[in-house]
Image (cartoon, rainbow, N blue to C red; front, top):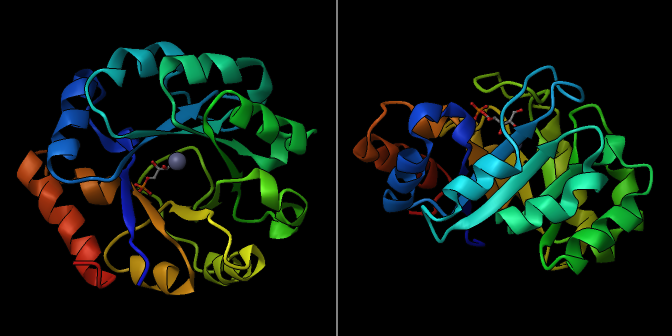
Length: 222
Ligand code: DX5
Ligand code: ZN
């Protein structure tokens, strides 16, 4: 089986102690740090932006995986890159010039990701296959943590896996991922699992380690 990465979503962490929480999941053995940027426009919720990402960049060497749930990602791509994002993922639904946006992300020295909401077809990926390093499949409607996994995305993941045809592109799944839902998405081809509530429940480093181990065990990666 391909190596599975776990990317805890800090949305479920204690924002009052964000740097400490990032260090705790780092020590507990996470692979990436998933940063959910919300603008109150594309999604109803608001979280944080480049200044906060920059403020916690020094807390860890792990990959910063920035998920931009924003309506106008183009105008701030450089700012996110300078703040320390390693992966920048934009939503296909809001990019009028997706090909150009992805090229810009790579020009900034970052990995380029495309995210698809649960209702959105994967067909647009066919035309940018050589521009992407990651596809982020939303398995809930974005905006909030702690929602239930939408099972119809499993077939979508399998179709994307087939479309990628062996390319070196990660398939990341985000929303409602737990030890119960992870096996189906990994079987369909997912390689990066974002998990907020399922990782941060318990509130301690040892709980985070146990929570991530439970997910890894469920997908046969432990
Ligand atoms: C949802 C975010 C997710 C969210 C996942 O808009 O993109 O990353 O934090 O949270 P859980 O794992 O609790 O569904
Ligand atoms: Zn996310």
